[in-house]
Image (cartoon, rainbow, N blue to C red; front, top):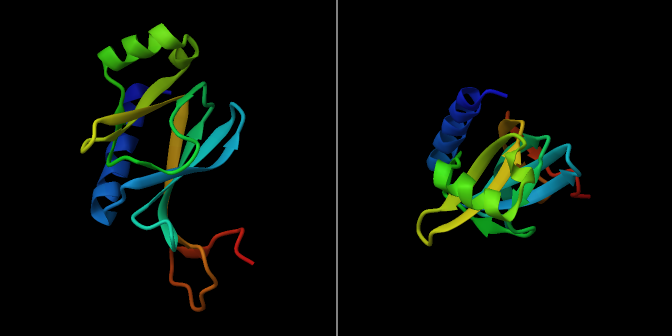
Amino acid sequence: MEKGRISRKLEAIQKEIDQRNIGDFRIIKYEYNEELTLAGSFDFSYYHDIEIFFKNVSFIACPGSEFKANRIRLANEAEEEMLYKISHAYQEGVTICLEDTYFGHKFYLSVSDLEYQVQTVYYYKRDQLKPNERIADWVK
């Protein structure tokens, strides 16, 4: 996967994050070394607005629960060098940084590719869904 293409996808995701005031993320699905799905929301009590699908994940350094991040970008050279010191696996693919610019926290994923979907996913039953809305699979 070309870094430039991933960078353009990250810029598009960042625009969605800014428009929707998304600041909270959580892993909602992980298939070992295949795909990790990250959901982003302004309010996880009721819904999430974006799902990011990371492909061929070779390195993860982020909480397994909810965490704050308001910026998504490629890791810079200094960050890659720091990660190299703690793990050699991260080099497989492109390293993405999820950053909380308010408190300086940074989380990392190394992947071969990514896709995303902007869609409001409700955590409760709701009638008359609009386009780009759905109920979470686990809601009964």
